[in-house]
Length: 118
Image (cartoon, rainbow, N blue to C red; front, side, top):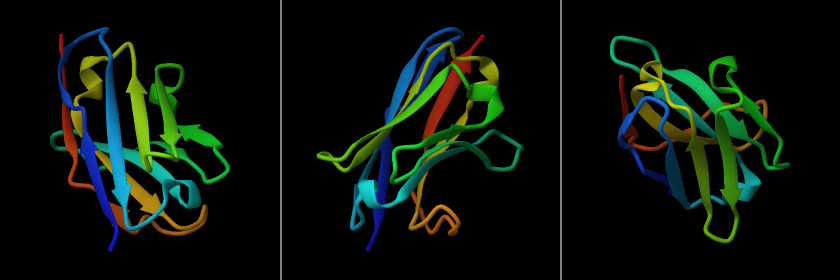
C-alpha cells in the first residue's frame, strides 16, 4: 500500500522560502513520476511540478525560476523548494505519484498548508 506524507508547510511572508517534503512508502520515488499539486481556497487543484524517474523536471509557468523539485532516493523522499513566495502561492500542497509518464496520478498525500502573508 502506497503512502505519501507531506510536511514543511507553514506561514511565511512574501518573498520568503519554504521547503516541502514528501516521504513515500510502499513505492520508490526513483521508479515513479512524483509530482506536486496545489489547491487554493475556492479553486481547483492545479499541477505545480513533477520529477520523472529519469530526473527530468517540469514546472507550471507561474513557479518557474522560483520553485525546484528534487529527489533523495536514499530517503525515498521528494522535496519542493519554494523561494520568492507570493500571496498567490497560498494553497494546500499535495504530493502525488504515478507509475509512468503517461499514466494517471494514482497515489496522493494528505496535503500540507502553505500560507504566504502580504
